[in-house]
Length: 105
Image 1 (spheres, one colour):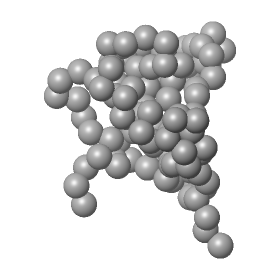
Image 2 (cartoon, rainbow, N blue to C red):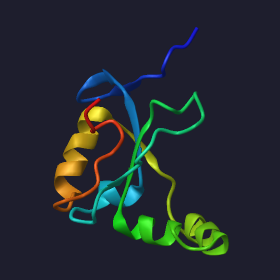
Image 3 (cartoon, helix red, strand yellow):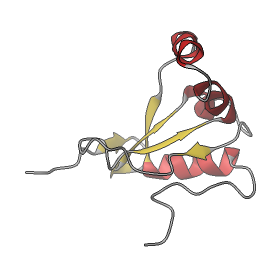
């Protein structure tokens, strides 16, 4: 049985889970980058992901820099889909690329 996991948000109740970098929760105007395609792993394919411009910059480097950056950066956080919209509104830049779940069809 394929039951997608839900997240219980104190403000919005039971919703779809989303994963964001810690910088999106602690700052505003840090940029808002989304996954352009769903994860290949069926267990995580419904998970919406977003991260800031700083994380995007470091994650585009070679594996050693990514490994070091990940050691120094707090773990990502889970938020609900409605909280993700608030995070997007606080951080998104004009003309950003839409996430896979935001595109039509």
